[in-house]
Length: 109
Image (tube, rainbow, N blue to C red; front, side):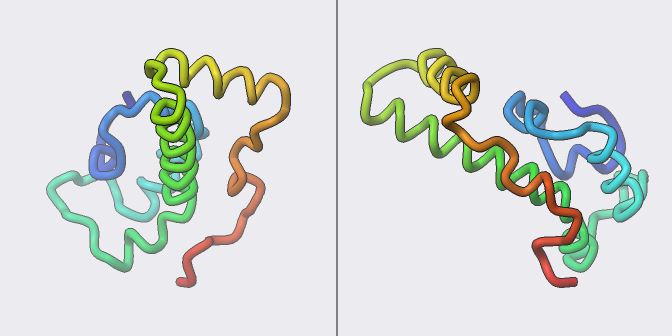
């Protein structure tokens, strides 16, 4: 689970999110945009500036959807979907982190 500060507004301990992110970069962006006071609720404008956080969430959702389709059509369990996706990654048949190479924000801002 990613600890501390305003980060709990962004993620709730998802292993999938932790797997796809550079935790230091995540914390740096959140702290610089939102600050560290969790009593202050983030504004819409602040959330729009969280480009790396958005990349993490989009990659996590993309993976989750991909694995859900596999489970639905194969009738297999979550562990089987994890193993299937790991096999695709190992064989270079699944493109990882499609947003990670970009240094520009996907959200105009």
